[in-house]
Length: 297
Image 1 (cartoon, rainbow, N blue to C red):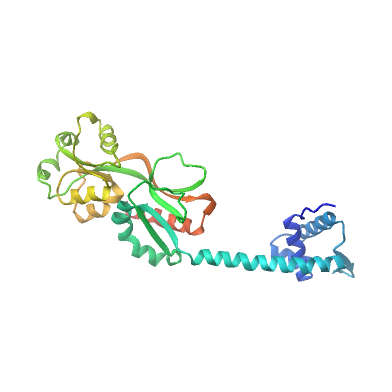
Image 2 (image 1 turned 30 degrees about the horizontal axis):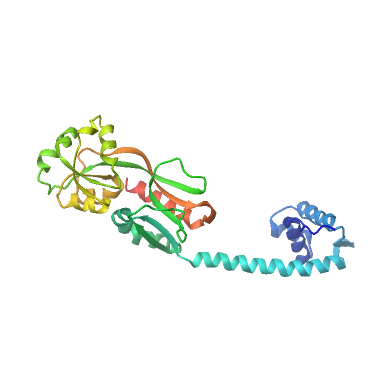
């Protein structure tokens, strides 16, 4: 005797037909055809080697075996529906935890947070900032927003939002501003450039994109994090380099200027979601972020 369970679709079709006492109504509830339900019921009868329905006039009547299976399946599917609803409600009530670098959080995300909460109140967003190495697979994190380069790992659902564009920025308060703001990009080769230890390739990459010899760059004050680098630039301490998205508000306000524009890199601002924990709220957030970035481009 086989102890294998019948196919779930067959059990589901039988449970609906037995509960509603109608093949047609079961088909409507399951959004399938009358024939599909009939086939699943026959499959179940063949698997169990027992008749579950008998004909009664133009209708059907449950056999003793059918009544027994109906009672058990009704209880089990009822408990399953209740449990699934509780799990879905629990996920909907839980906050959506978003991790991102502190510089991105402070300079781009927080200024838009009020609008995000008004437009997506169902998100129940909780932010987790880090200036160290981010781990998008970390337990307790639903999604990670950061700049990263493809290819993307197979175990992550990655929503690409915008290409990274980097460029030099400086404040009108900088002592050399008058001499630099209308000068060619090569003028920066003689400047002590502000830089970060987390992106040592930023200045050389920008120089190469502008046909400049990266070996002639002169690095000045270094900072561990991008946030402090940009604060130093805004305070007039020198020329920094940064992603366009992170200085967009400063450029609009006149705190910083970007005389040489921005160049695209191979990195992308992307929302990473572990594939095994894909939450429908991630798609809502990705769509909102993409629209916001395009609107402010």
